[in-house]
Image (cartoon, rainbow, N blue to C red):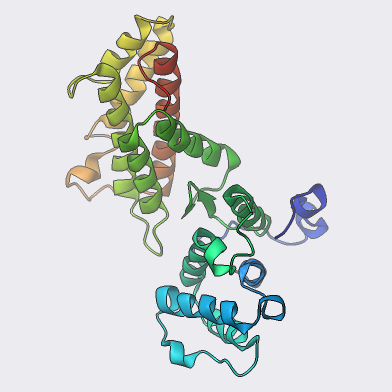
Amino acid sequence: MEQKGARLTRPRFSERFGAVKVDIQVTSMNDALKNSIWNFIRAVLPDPEHLGPGPLSKSVEAIAIRVLRRPIDEIRRDYPSAPRNWLFERYNELGWAEVYDLLEFILQNAKDISGGTLAKIDDGTLVNAANHFLAREHSGYRFVAGELTQLTTATEIAEIERAVDSAAAVGLDGVRKHITHALNLFGKRPDPDFRNAVKEAISAVESIVRVINGKRGGDLRDALEAVSTRIELHPALEAGLAKLYAYTSDKDVVRHSIYGDDSVPVDDADARFMMVTCSAFVNFLISKAEAAGLLKTT
């Protein structure tokens, strides 16, 4: 695995001084990014020189069946590293979205794919290694909550990850599922579903509001009032949050296309804003509700 460090994360001279154009890659993939992804995959694959040919062959078979959808009879096995070389040939034939399919599979199944050599490696270390080279090569995607998602800033990633983790910690599985589903829809390749990603993000807020209210009805203002009876909450902040939520929940504004009006599409910017904003709402409400004794950490 690559190690994080200043010399590795610092942009190259040619990038810092504008000698080369740096573009965030969303619907394409240059050679540097594709090569970096392969190097990560190769590092995860079992080394036949140390483990023998069996584990490598088994891992490549799994990739052929579950990702490439190729017959395993095609896999070369005439020398120890032949399965890996066969995979590399197939890899070079993949389009950008298919490469991300393979990367996602490799990371989510790294410990099995490695033949057990990564058994003691923390999952977070693998995610950090992948996100490191994705950022270095200006990919528009990052791993968030185990899903490869089209998010490009550390702040956005941290806010959404915190919402997923916080919801899980207090047993709000419905909230966690809504946010995770929003991520899945947002990062769906090659055709992201921005409209339904917005719907799921808003549903996450609505879910925690119902929990705080202790009933199926009520809205954010009711939840904020329930919190403010237990702890101090500035009236201006309470009113501002309620108004912002009213805007995000208005089916005639942000969610219009979800309810059948496809004439005004929801784009990447809309979905990104809603996912980050709704995650921030979730984080705020969990924090305040916990402080007020309305939620219990599991």
